[in-house]
Length: 548
Image 1 (spheres, one colour):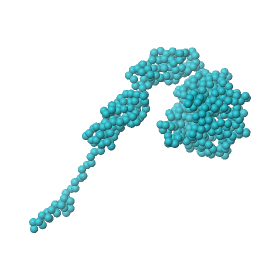
Image 2 (cartoon, one colour):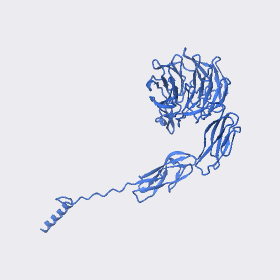
Image 3 (cartoon, rainbow, N blue to C red):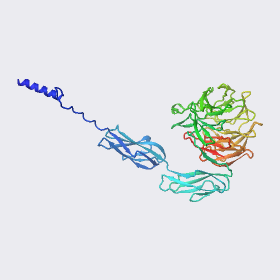
Image 4 (cartoon, one colour):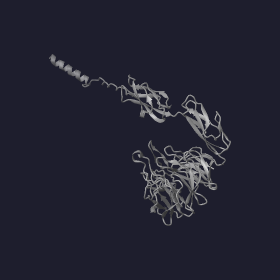
């Protein structure tokens, strides 16, 4: 009997513990999870000069053990076991990340962002235009050094004089001169400013900036006086550049840019040609930079047309060959001659095509005597087209040979050779029918050099002859025929500009630009001013200036 009572009591205890049998005891809650571990690094964002140090701290949340290990992304500088970071002495940039990893919970990691600023000397203004004997006071800024004093000098022996306080007096001779500020604390650090001394009244003044920074783009004067900017190059990834599809219009009355319809394909190093009906034909070029590190930037066969009446681009027929750094020339009959250009392997083409706006298609025409890219094509007064210079491939020497395209026979025939083979030059038809060839590059592929000299092509004799030379190297410059018959040559790596006088065959300084440019555009506006805009590729510019 006692055994039965004991078993009953045991069952009752089990039922009570399990909450059965009508018991009212509350169920116990499970214990809370341990707190998550995280790492907080301070300061979270910091800029440090080259070679300087900054102390980082790490707090490990959720752990009693506060120990961490420190590391630097991409070894951009060093950090010790206490969190003391030392920036690289010979590099700047970023952002890079400082990481702190918990020893107690290695999956927990915190980070901070670091920018490394260069130790440098800056001069203001960076460019200035003065009359002979004019004066200008320059100021310096030294970043990253405790001693911020500098010594002033003029690079050219005949470039004028400057005082210890930075007060400069220009020489009586016109030309381009460099003002140099050198750090007293570190004489290896210096900066220079460019001075243009000129008697020319021509000056550049800033105008509105583009909505999109672009270089190696096209700029086309439309029938209503506005300028269409299309495409251009931009940095696609650390190793390559790619095209952009956006377009915008410049209004010279308002002095401002406004967006317009974008192209159907991103592109740079393309062409844009104003057609007789007011539309604009855009052809070829490099395409998008998406995945160009692995695949390369594609070269396009596509073409499209901008219609100002509805501010939009529409696709048209494709070219027979992919082309970049080719030429497009409007012929008197209204068709557009397309010549040469590189393919994706950097090999130039000898082929040529004609675009017929009436049917929106390209058809092949006669081949040139040599493959070419980065050449020029100039419509002569007699309706023929002069093809000059260029490269047969990216590894070849520049071409000196020139040829003439006859639209009536669709044939190319050789003409006189250049005095110096060149590529990437400019060609301008002068009022007297001659063609001015300016600048560009020459030399072997391993030793390219800019060409200072200029040449004139005379259609009556079919020959080239030397004319004056520019005062400075100008790779990627522009050349624009002004209303008075002179030619404005601007930029090409620097901010300076020169005027070519076809009567005297000489170049002389004119007012300099506000900023150095290469790969920019220059467009003669209806009122006689020149609009200079953009430039660059990996780091393109959005700014624009007017020359008058």
